[in-house]
Length: 135
Image (cartoon, rainbow, N blue to C red; front, side):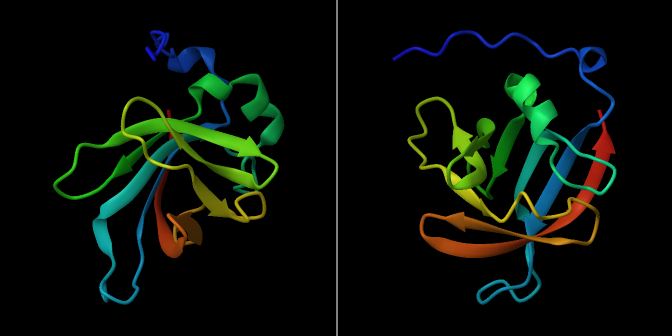
Protein backbone atom coordinates (compact mmCIF):
# COMPACT_ATOMS: atom_id res chain seq x y z
CA UNK A 1 0.00 0.00 0.00
CA UNK A 2 1.56 3.29 -1.02
CA UNK A 3 1.35 6.44 1.05
CA UNK A 4 0.16 9.56 -0.69
CA UNK A 5 2.70 12.35 -0.70
CA UNK A 6 2.29 14.58 2.33
CA UNK A 7 1.98 18.25 1.57
CA UNK A 8 4.60 20.39 3.30
CA UNK A 9 3.27 22.33 6.24
CA UNK A 10 4.02 26.02 6.20
CA UNK A 11 4.47 27.18 9.78
CA UNK A 12 2.82 30.49 8.90
CA UNK A 13 -0.33 28.64 7.86
CA UNK A 14 -0.91 27.14 11.33
CA UNK A 15 -2.58 28.93 14.25
CA UNK A 16 -0.22 30.49 16.79
CA UNK A 17 -1.11 27.84 19.40
CA UNK A 18 0.89 25.14 17.60
CA UNK A 19 3.98 23.97 19.46
CA UNK A 20 6.76 21.47 19.06
CA UNK A 21 6.92 19.32 22.20
CA UNK A 22 9.79 17.02 23.15
CA UNK A 23 9.39 14.38 25.83
CA UNK A 24 12.22 12.10 27.03
CA UNK A 25 12.19 8.91 29.05
CA UNK A 26 12.14 9.65 32.78
CA UNK A 27 13.74 7.54 35.51
CA UNK A 28 12.49 3.97 35.58
CA UNK A 29 13.90 0.49 36.24
CA UNK A 30 16.69 -0.10 33.76
CA UNK A 31 17.11 3.67 33.25
CA UNK A 32 17.89 5.15 36.70
CA UNK A 33 18.87 8.48 35.12
CA UNK A 34 16.23 8.37 32.40
CA UNK A 35 17.35 8.40 28.77
CA UNK A 36 17.35 11.46 26.53
CA UNK A 37 17.78 9.25 23.45
CA UNK A 38 14.42 7.54 24.08
CA UNK A 39 12.10 10.35 23.17
CA UNK A 40 9.21 11.70 21.15
CA UNK A 41 8.99 15.01 19.35
CA UNK A 42 5.54 16.04 18.22
CA UNK A 43 3.60 18.99 16.85
CA UNK A 44 0.28 19.84 18.49
CA UNK A 45 -1.97 22.81 19.25
CA UNK A 46 -1.44 23.59 22.93
CA UNK A 47 -3.80 25.89 24.85
CA UNK A 48 -2.82 28.47 27.47
CA UNK A 49 -3.02 25.82 30.23
CA UNK A 50 -0.65 23.50 28.35
CA UNK A 51 -3.29 21.02 27.18
CA UNK A 52 -3.92 19.71 23.66
CA UNK A 53 -6.61 21.80 21.97
CA UNK A 54 -8.91 19.19 20.41
CA UNK A 55 -10.82 21.69 18.28
CA UNK A 56 -7.63 22.96 16.61
CA UNK A 57 -6.32 19.41 16.28
CA UNK A 58 -9.49 18.45 14.36
CA UNK A 59 -9.03 21.40 12.01
CA UNK A 60 -5.31 20.66 11.39
CA UNK A 61 -4.88 16.90 11.89
CA UNK A 62 -2.32 16.54 9.12
CA UNK A 63 0.00 19.00 10.85
CA UNK A 64 -0.03 17.06 14.14
CA UNK A 65 2.93 14.82 13.51
CA UNK A 66 5.20 12.76 15.75
CA UNK A 67 8.73 11.41 15.53
CA UNK A 68 9.60 8.44 17.76
CA UNK A 69 13.32 8.47 18.64
CA UNK A 70 15.25 5.42 19.83
CA UNK A 71 19.03 4.92 20.02
CA UNK A 72 20.52 3.03 17.10
CA UNK A 73 17.22 3.13 15.18
CA UNK A 74 15.86 5.35 12.47
CA UNK A 75 13.20 7.70 13.85
CA UNK A 76 9.67 6.50 13.11
CA UNK A 77 7.24 9.11 11.80
CA UNK A 78 3.53 9.30 12.39
CA UNK A 79 0.63 11.42 13.61
CA UNK A 80 -0.99 12.46 16.84
CA UNK A 81 -4.39 10.74 16.75
CA UNK A 82 -7.56 10.78 18.80
CA UNK A 83 -9.99 7.88 19.03
CA UNK A 84 -12.42 6.32 21.50
CA UNK A 85 -9.55 5.34 23.82
CA UNK A 86 -8.09 8.84 23.84
CA UNK A 87 -4.93 10.40 22.40
CA UNK A 88 -2.07 8.43 20.96
CA UNK A 89 0.52 8.12 18.23
CA UNK A 90 -0.08 6.28 14.95
CA UNK A 91 2.93 5.49 12.78
CA UNK A 92 3.06 5.82 9.02
CA UNK A 93 4.96 3.81 6.48
CA UNK A 94 6.25 0.29 6.70
CA UNK A 95 7.47 0.32 10.31
CA UNK A 96 4.50 -1.84 11.35
CA UNK A 97 4.61 -0.28 14.79
CA UNK A 98 1.40 -0.55 16.78
CA UNK A 99 -0.27 2.63 17.91
CA UNK A 100 0.96 3.94 21.24
CA UNK A 101 -1.57 5.36 23.68
CA UNK A 102 -1.03 8.43 25.79
CA UNK A 103 -2.29 7.87 29.31
CA UNK A 104 -4.85 10.61 30.01
CA UNK A 105 -3.25 12.95 27.43
CA UNK A 106 -6.47 14.96 27.42
CA UNK A 107 -5.90 15.88 31.06
CA UNK A 108 -2.13 16.24 30.91
CA UNK A 109 -0.32 19.56 30.77
CA UNK A 110 2.46 19.77 28.20
CA UNK A 111 4.71 22.21 30.04
CA UNK A 112 8.42 21.81 30.75
CA UNK A 113 9.04 19.58 33.76
CA UNK A 114 5.66 17.78 33.71
CA UNK A 115 5.52 13.98 33.48
CA UNK A 116 3.52 12.16 30.79
CA UNK A 117 2.81 8.41 30.53
CA UNK A 118 2.65 6.41 27.30
CA UNK A 119 1.53 2.81 26.88
CA UNK A 120 4.08 1.24 24.54
CA UNK A 121 3.30 -2.32 23.46
CA UNK A 122 1.36 -3.01 26.67
CA UNK A 123 3.92 -1.46 29.03
CA UNK A 124 3.52 1.95 30.64
CA UNK A 125 6.52 4.30 30.50
CA UNK A 126 6.90 7.75 32.00
CA UNK A 127 8.33 10.66 30.03
CA UNK A 128 9.26 14.18 31.07
CA UNK A 129 8.47 17.24 28.97
CA UNK A 130 11.82 18.89 28.19
CA UNK A 131 10.89 21.51 25.60
CA UNK A 132 7.77 23.26 24.34
CA UNK A 133 8.62 25.70 21.57
CA UNK A 134 6.85 27.85 19.01
CA UNK A 135 7.04 26.67 15.42
